[in-house]
Length: 236
Length: 331
Image (cartoon, rainbow over all chains, first blue to last red):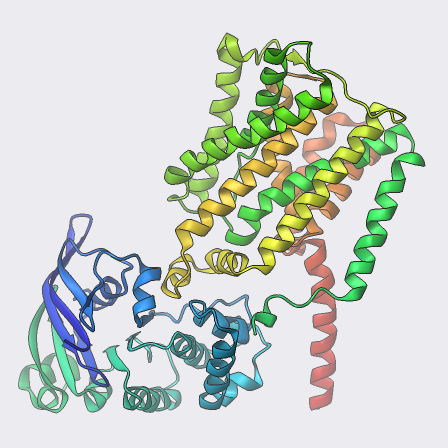
């Protein structure tokens, strides 16, 4: 099968169970959003997919290749890239260095140059400031940099963990527009967001995670209209 | 395109390095014996501090126990020299000692890496501190290692040079080799990866950097080069015991020199070593009991006033100037 397939994964931090049989799918070019309250297991799901955590059981595969069991740095070589929560840019490196690190797996200098050029076309603001230290950017700009760094890895699945958290509302719209654009280029998106309304608006499919299990799933628009979702996550 | 990381080494930089090297080679023929002994220490311990930086400077895994490798190298050379007996010449013993020490430290570091590199921050620092203490105690306690009695090493001198000059030049060779290795690592993909590990290890792995393998590589290389320093030091003293090489102040000085000069830079450890050795042995030469007090005070001062070291200070000042002119342009 094309795209992401997560099957029945279990994971526990020490004795604390975080995932109890979560399963989900994401097709090429689809925006899939993962909703849930704090501690529901959203970030854990993303980390398990990225290989940063090993599931106790269950499997993760992408485009038919089994990924669970591979270390993180190998998982990303299959096109699965996580932009982690809290941005995590290398603050004592310049913006350009951060971007180049995104393309670390790419050995062909020519290709790296093309990727950087393309990236600067999408993010002209980063080009202006490319020799500045990443730590000197505002939160919103750092988020853009983190996404841009993720794109430098030429992902086929881009996972974004809370990309709008702590960002000025004015910039949040820009981030969501960017996500739609990235998906339109054929990249699958797994979006984890506390801003449930905005993410359901752009998502083609959505999952609701609770206590490590998927308790509800459906098309983004259907979930927007769902009474339970409205009550629990949209605050209406 | 990785040009942002490896700026090309300019002609001026090559010229500067060559000039410094020529001056350093000529030094033993003009300096007094006392001055040369100080210069010896700067080259040796600056070089070992640079070896420490291969791990600590890039990845921020601060080892507080590099004396473990230093001492292990010294003891390997000493015990080997004794086993070989008097039939073999000093220089041959030295070379064999270097080879065996490198081999043993390679093996020990590779085995130790598995448990200790899983630890982060303070836990790693303390594990390394413990390793140095344990090795020191073992060398002292078991009679076959002769750590408490010590052993004598054959004096080595090149014809035409005295022993101080000879070891000065050997330490210089050691320092130059370490500089070359450090610069090569820093400019390689591995160096870039290690630098990312130092900033955010988990994110580095997510970007496709094989963090575990690179850390292992840096740790082992750092250990082997440190042990080479230990062998040379042992031969320069010609008599060693546990207390002369498994010394906690050696471990701490490596960190101090790197910090004073500038962590992660090539020249930093040497500048730091020069400053600290000058202060403790020349300025305070008659006040030996004040060494630790002054060392501590300088460390506190550096951490507060110049966290990026002397070199960082130099880089920061033009930065401040640039920012100042930038704001003028805007107003």
